Each structure stands twice: as C-alpha cells, then as structure tokens.
Image (cartoon, rainbow, N blue to C red; front, side):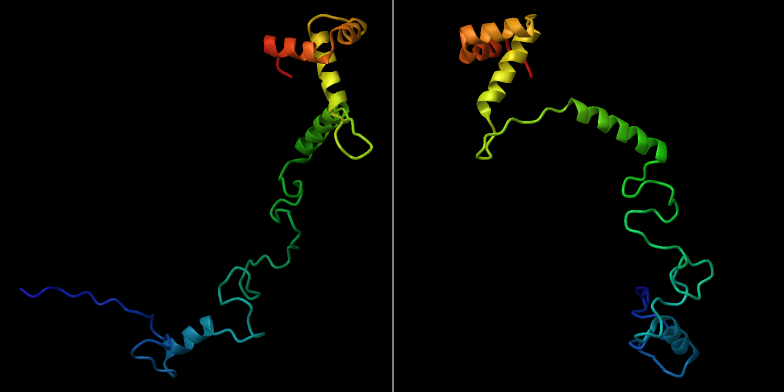
Length: 157
C-alpha cells in the first residue's frame, strides 16, 4: 500500500510567491486589493477595524494617553471610578497629615542624632512615660542605654 501524501500549500491563491501565480487572475487581483498598500494609499488593509472604509470603525473616538476610549468617564491610567478616585485622594491626604519631616543637617545629610533621639523618646512614651518624663529619662540615661533597652525588649517601630 502506498503512503498517502497530504499537500499543504505554502501560499494562498493569488499570492505572488505561489507556484501558479498569474497576476491577471481574479485571485491575484483580490489578494493585491487586500494586501498591497502603497504608501499613502491605505493605512490599514481591507476589513481592518481601523480602516476608514470598515463599517463600525472607531476612528472618530479621540485617543488620549492613559484613557480607556470605551470608558472616558474613568480616571486616566488607573481606571478608577470617580468615587474610588475621591476616596483614594481623601485617604492619601489623611496619611500626608501624619507624615513627619526628616530632620536634615545644613550640609544636606540626614540628622541621625535627631532621628535616634525621636526614636528613643517614642519608645519611652510607648512604655507609659509622659513626654516630660521621657525627656528626663533620656537626659539622665543617655540615648545609648534607652536604645539598648528598646533592642532588648524587641520593640518594633
């Protein structure tokens, strides 16, 4: 019995590289109409969603960076609804009020001594001392002993 051979075409009918190409055939003319796009003649092939002559194209919708053209009412880049965006903005403003400025030296470096002092005072206040008591303890014991106590207790923050 002879094996069956399956013939697979390399190119569709009408393609210029097909073995039986005839430029005057109806298949070649149709292939050229759909696929040959000279510069300035067509931007997109026939039937492409962006082609001007395709019914239902979306060329009239403006393209704005970050905006979903199907949902221009949503926030740009995030896609959040106006209510979600307003909630996020309110939450960010509340967090911004809680932020403290990093102490800086005139040379432009972080003042690590003030940062350590603030950490020591915060630790003492979390241990139940008033701000005045915490300042007195820090002045008496020194920052090294207070921070060592913090490290010994394993207090975070």
